[in-house]
Length: 383
Image 1 (tube, rainbow, N blue to C red):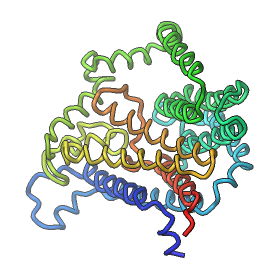
Image 2 (cartoon, rainbow, N blue to C red; image 1 turned 120 degrees about the vertical axis):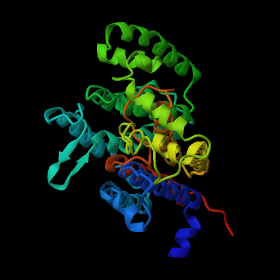
Image 3 (cartoon, rainbow, N blue to C red; image 1 turned 90 degrees about the vertical axis):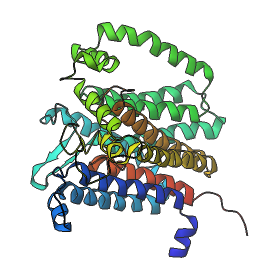
């Protein structure tokens, strides 16, 4: 069984994911440590300054994600078709119920279980649901026509994605909504949708955005956009996170200050959300330009490898699933790293496999399970 497993599993994906998770655990321990002052001389002195609470929680998160990964790896992805409708609508119900519970960090996004000190974010898990749901709708049309041409199917796909996206918008969670829209766009592109629809969609966005800016967006949302364009407009408020993140990244230089060392801005808590949304800042501060480049290369390895897996899949359904998971990873990486260096607005979106958080790590591991499921069931060469 083990020989068969290693024969069909994609080792490149496994190595890249494990490397990212490992770097994430070390980074969480580093940025949450009590600041080192240079007087540490023994192993006990070093370990006394480390905060293992979140590292242990993240290990548990990974093990839960690993269990979900194995389930989705073993179960043939074709079996997801008959049940995905029920999962989709169950997820919609959870998103609606969220508005009836107390907000967490100003967002109606989590079910908090204080007894076990855990929280579940349905919008995160819904990313896998929407990927499989869209893959089912799109593949059914493509199997018949060769590409997505039916207005009914296109409208259905757009509607299925916009429904949760709108609910997430009102939480409000713009980062997660952005990921949903990227998933939709990439999967429609994968479905060889006519260029006329693409041009119409781009034109619609260009027309709607300025109208929304002056009529729909709240003062707080407009302020976020203005601060994104110029963080110095509110250096101690909305622009604080980006300014401190850029200072931290710049202080790392080419090779970094190193992990578990003195004088790091992340340990001194100058970088907000240093173990979650802004973990990339702490990593680059410690490992420098070299470390940041390695992180980005690992993500690119996953993206290009998954594009290859999508091309080699045995059917359109599998191809659409892999393209959706790739889009999810791409959106997270682009938005998260972009906001830490000031190229994207701050939306509170985690960095897959690296940021602390149970729901996102679970979702990411489920995505990996789906990708490898498709790869293991690809057409095999006859010996």
